[in-house]
Amino acid sequence: MNRFIKWLIDSARGLLADMLGQIIAFFMFIAAGLAWLYFATDYAVIPVFIVVVVLGGYIYGLVEGKKGENTETKQD
Image (cartoon, rainbow, N blue to C red):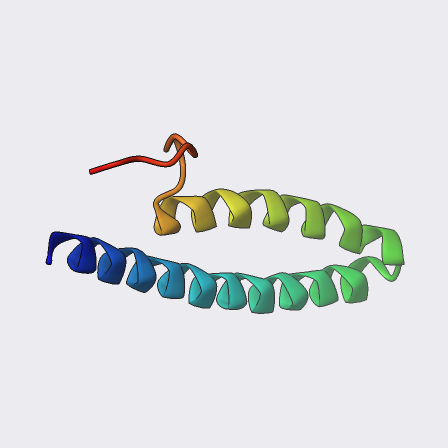
């Protein structure tokens, strides 16, 4: 039963991380569009994408619970 609960929690965290990734992507495209409209150049979009991808990846890892975890298989 303990493995089932762990699997259930890991699955829920993965689902929440994926949902958060979609929300971050939505706001990234809005911010990129506003930067493009304000500066009237395609090059204004590049820093927005870079910053949001780096921050979004970090936040995604925190929500999913994979930051700082050893990637080797663990035995309970």
